[in-house]
Image 1 (tube, rainbow over the protein chains, first blue to last red):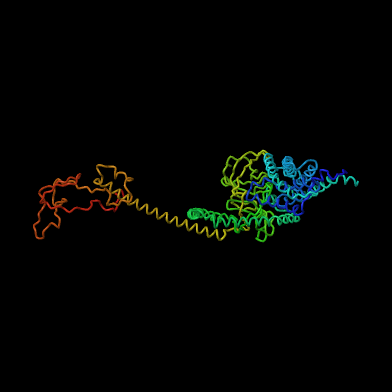
Image 2 (image 1 turned 45 degrees about the vertical axis):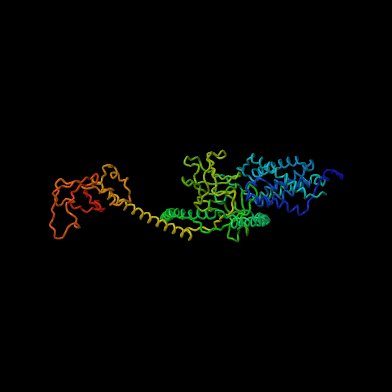
Length: 174
Length: 443
């Protein structure tokens, strides 16, 4: 097992959050995601819960915490849809785990890195949803417009930058 | 062994979480609907296990209070603005709406006649129709938040008499049906969701089909083969065959027709929904149907029929009036045709063409100027103008007798040269015959 020194990068950049933040921010993201598309239908292209999953995963830098956070957010998101519970749960579990694993390796405070990881994970989320619906659920006529998914990834990336900057204030360095 | 778990702790926990969710999915997921195998029981029925419904209820209970809170704030702000501040053009709108009501009453009268006829025919054929009897109005308070699952939440639930699989509509057309119904909220599965379906009927060709939602949010009919009678713009109605939506509700209009690459030889008919599914505010949930018309509809029908009757009477009275005018005009025309003196020599077509004569002109005015009679060749005591006026005669005086000097009358000028001794005849007001029509010689 690798031994981390006091000044190792993981310890220096590993953050924690107040329990209220840990609980309320994902709930707020899900509520906003459910609320805003009613007056603004085009808001449905964004995936705020996905951005929150990525943010908590890369900030905590713990794959297990990232996976659990992703699973909780995804399952809550599924419970509000007509889909079987677990579709978003599985996708966001994988994303939370992967994001936390990547966060161990690279500097996720850099804005360019944030743009790249948000764009990449948004596309990965679409790919995972496609595979789950087609392979696990067996919906043979499930299709995705990949142009639309690219636009969705770009839109999520644009939204992620201010959201991450805002949530940076809630970080507590351990 | 212990070192294995320690070393691969993270991946093992990930696999455990994923496995648990996959098992949960397998429990929930049923076999997907095969294209063309439509029935009300196979398409998107709310058959979640009880535990899953409970999870959805918990999630809904977490989210909907916030949605209600923000909705109430927004509603109050809008109410205050629209009812107390933004009242410009209200009078004009009111006048326009009054006019619209008047127009719609006339339309209602026409439709009522057709409806009554339809009811009579249905009674003759012993046809069982289901009319919308009861509806519950509800407000949309939230969405699923995902464009892969097209669903909205409404603020009415089980305590308002709602049940799963009840149809949800707007005045424009169908919206969807209830999925999970909680005590105070409900989920509405929109017709453009990929798990939605409805039995539909093309309005003009009467071809039946199955409407389905897609993952891209479009609604399509893909169980019909190529048919040249199906055209873009045709209205699509509910057929009533799915036991969810009553028959005859508007669904949308056909947008495009193209071969379905995935299911040959079927065509993919894309339908534009009649209701605006992306911005729903208020909806109606059909909570009951009945075989006969509801009381309010009967009253509307009676009002429409009465209006139609009044319209018919008014139209008959107007037609009779027009006929009377026409008859009067015809009589005057006949008389005018028979009296050559009425023709103006300077304008012979003036009375020859009946269109040139005004309908309101009375018989006394026909012909305009009163012509003078032609001069007699051999005047006698009966000749007009030869008898003096009674006012000029003296009682007891001898009869002057007929004038020996013939008078000359110039009809064209109207001037007459008369002897000074000749008494002037009284001027007659008109020589136009009365307006009573003469018997037709052909009869």
